[in-house]
Image (cartoon, rainbow, N blue to C red; front, side):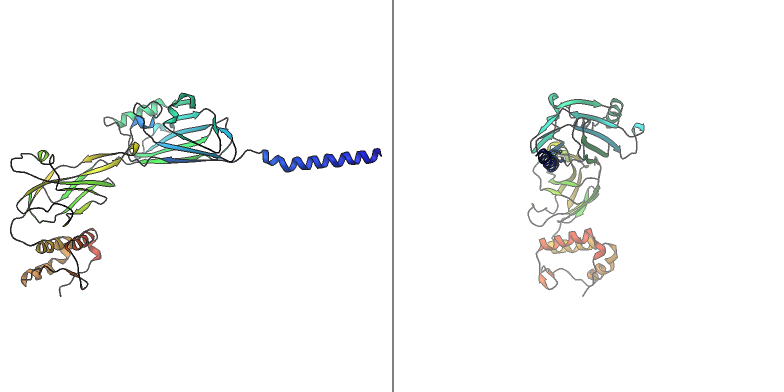
Length: 355
């Protein structure tokens, strides 16, 4: 009987150990994931990245923490700058400009933290600013206050007292576009047709373009652009064909002022702009038809490669009939203007012959 009881005890112990071995894995730390979202900006100020002390705080990034079961984590957030000039902020060695460690954050399924939340001292265990690096950034940023162009790397890693999770990072690339050069029409051009092709060169991704009538009695370009625009357009290329529809038609003999403005995305979803110089042009006088003007525009679009073709057209006294056909089908002036824009953007892709 005693032997039986001892055997039964051993069996019970073995079953208990087996049970523990089955359920112990469920006691392991649930996996934690961290994701980030950041503002699509191309320019920032020193105040924007010193987000704890900023007097004009704006949303810069969001951190989303997810866990399969309730847990508590701490985050270590750091910023490191790699300037496009190659200049180091701490000599030759890379360094963090700011480092922030949060207090323990309770996560029940998921939790979202933004840079605006981190202004709350109850969420911060420490916040360290590398003063030499910050001062160097501020010196470079003067007088505009805009951070120098480069890659600004944010890293989100587990704090010392946090369960382990894979660190994540995101990069904000600052290009600080600030230059624009107008190419055509040249200033005070007096032989522009009714559908000018505007060209410029700059380092922005998006542009705003304006054309204004210079009224009699107005003595300056600035005075002209204070009025109602003939054209107010947002474009993503560095050229624009004046449309035949959807805009006020330009009048022969009238003078117009134009400019383009480079658009830069900043925090809080806004945009700031830098404007080109102001230029004027005059639409040529005369009774030349729209189709004749478009023929001249086509000659300009195709470039000097086809000069002999247009010389032949003029030598034979040929002129537009007013009927525009493409591959045997009639098209509108608006369609032709769109085609002209494509040709002007890629003239080498076109082959033209006179039939």
